[in-house]
Length: 355
Image 1 (cartoon, rainbow, N blue to C red):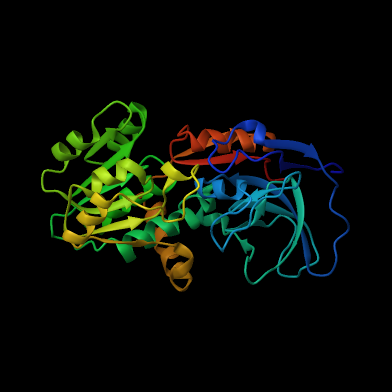
Image 2: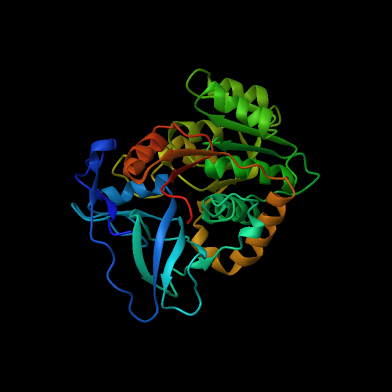
């Protein structure tokens, strides 16, 4: 291999703009130089595109833990899976499959030294059942977010006849969170999504008790019908008017797992975004717990959570769905499609096969 290529940011969509494929570019770039001591040459196999990356398209991300992408420069996402091609680090050998849960560049080939803040991890492929993409989904940051969100913020108590509602339910986090909520003890699980196909996926494949197509159905009416005893736990991936509607039907002492707010990611508002006074009043009057959930604050629980997730996946108790786009050159297109709800499950990009 003597050529290389990467994805760059060509222009910003504007702070309140909607991303389009022409915000991104794809061009050749230099092949990585010879390895220095401790460096590893990695070939990218798969990358993840995630809604939270939208803030990186702005000049100011609005959060302290991620930086903005620079115009004309190579960009990247959070999660990736690759293969070691060469190594001058004794901990890694050519052929090793590796993954990282932060700062994976959208480039075909790159060098990296092991870092404490963003460690590379060798993947035990025997635990993946032949699916190298699982570290991008349930056996990675997505799975950890769903698992720890449910465990730490859900307040689920088996035998209490609790109802869980998930918005963005057919996406990567939502689809796993709904299944985990059931396993934790919720007796009713209802998902909100954006197509009939996604509704069928939730009810027929994942075992949700009901699903609402917010584009064609009245969410308020359908929620009342599907959740006759009210809502006890809300895994919120969306925010906006949809979440106001769900909160209006939540019970006293219930819990909102504030995971994402994709409805307002294209708007210049703080995170978490402000909510209407009527919703604030409902939260106060009903003593609803709605505090921000950031999975990075639970790093001490990652190892235990990952072991449990692996058990659930290998036993078939959690099912995983992916939407795959081919080619690194289409990463920007995949991001735009995901932001517009074009995916079922996790949106990933297949870059190359292992050697």
